[in-house]
Length: 181
Image 1 (tube, rainbow, N blue to C red):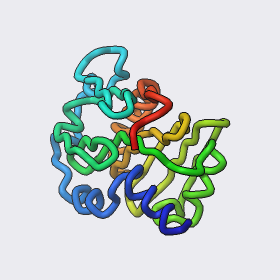
Image 2: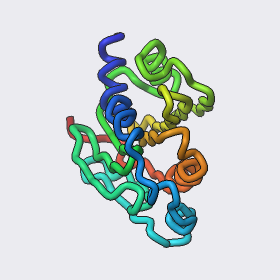
Image 3: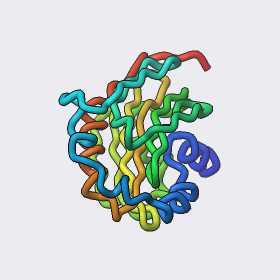
Image 4: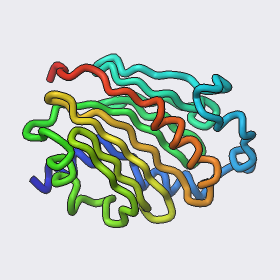
């Protein structure tokens, strides 16, 4: 079970090591990003919508902050200077709701410093710190799938990315209940 939880964390969460390295090389331009870039997606200024082809999950994000798109085994990562946004979906046996998902995460690397974690019957939010980074993750359990997003960014960029978290979270929509394995 512990090995599976580590695998789940790797697949659904952000890659902390790469982010810590990237966080040390933040560009001044990223720090001075205009407010219009991080405005809520409803404003339509610089936000784009991505739909995962396997699951149908959707998310909106500010393209200027996450210009690089990288395919993952179970989703897609969008990477910018010191920050990473991932959208993912996978079949997870034995997870019937948020309680089961939280149990898988408990004791897994990267979840030692959680500061905020509400849940409903079929959704779970986990947020806190990984080293000098802030992370925010939201997951939905739909049928036999766990679908979610993870956003990790330097704490020094909190003013910019906290607004991004709100917009991304508001835009996220889980997709199909069933997926091919």
